[in-house]
Image (cartoon, rainbow, N blue to C red; front, side):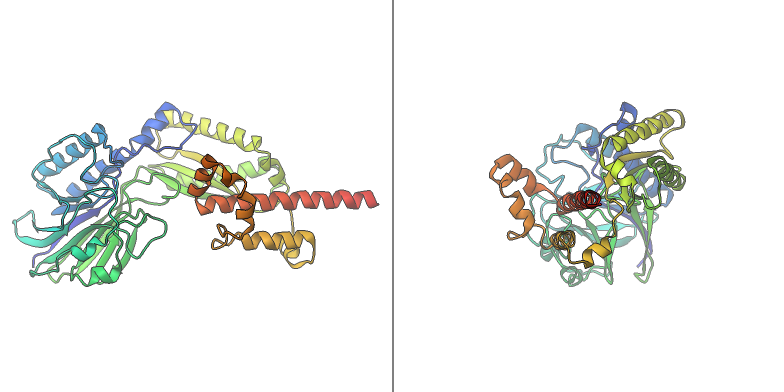
Length: 437
């Protein structure tokens, strides 16, 4: 077999609306909303510069089943550019862009092969000499809800060529993502393929190397749960079927979580200066990208009480955003750091270990709260949280909101309630001690 090179990309989510971001001026909002298109442009440039023989895209090219015209035309432009370079593209559609999506009949160039609603197989060739190098099998979602194990319907590997399977699926039941086309690594291994080019999970993962079972992640992070570098894999296969993967970044803006501890800070301004030094490091590490960060305020100290009031953080957030927006207008977005929000996880200056160990009302309350915060209990019907929320659950709209709430958000509520309660108890205790003197 001849050696060859291909790109494995997935989850382009073109024209993602980036819902939920607040405080953006027009320029910043436009830059963010165009980020998926810039990632697509980088993908095309990479394919040309690395002289790949073909590209596979494992689903969710578009962000919504109601596909925008802008997204379709930008994808068409990218495919036509690759056609000029004689780079073939093999595509499946996923749960966000199934075959029954509302879209215009945009005709893609002949270098693009879109797999239909049943598994089928095509042969890929090397660009330089048109020599057959790989068998590619794939299937697009006919509708947005594919809950069967479609991997079991893929045909077994047959010919003496490298076999690639395109599959948009949740492998081994990742609880962070919807269970579409569920299957196991064993299911995939039994098919006899050399490389499973997966899509659907937005975190880059190599589940297995024999055979390769790979999620490249999405090409551009879209919210704070999609942190870190985003991009695609360039895959080199030699004559002996030996496979080497190299990851390439495509994102022009990057999401990250930043720790901003209050420990040892004597004032809010001292903490602010420490935070600005941290954000300066983020800017230095991402000179060519816009950084969107959530600041996790941690630790214990007297500064917590001032931050807990809220208005200090609101004003600081507004001012720091204003500065970055002004910098972007004069210097561009590379190296800018936009604070998506603050997450207050700090606390007052309390000795938590001592409280947990002591036989007191505060100690018992703290132990109860920590027990409730374990994820397997947070939604338990007999738990304290469910009992406290019971009156609210009688209202249909509130019940719907609570049922959609992620466990981590509810846990954050519990942590804040714990902290506020302990602070009030300690304040009351000190007033009691003062009255007795």
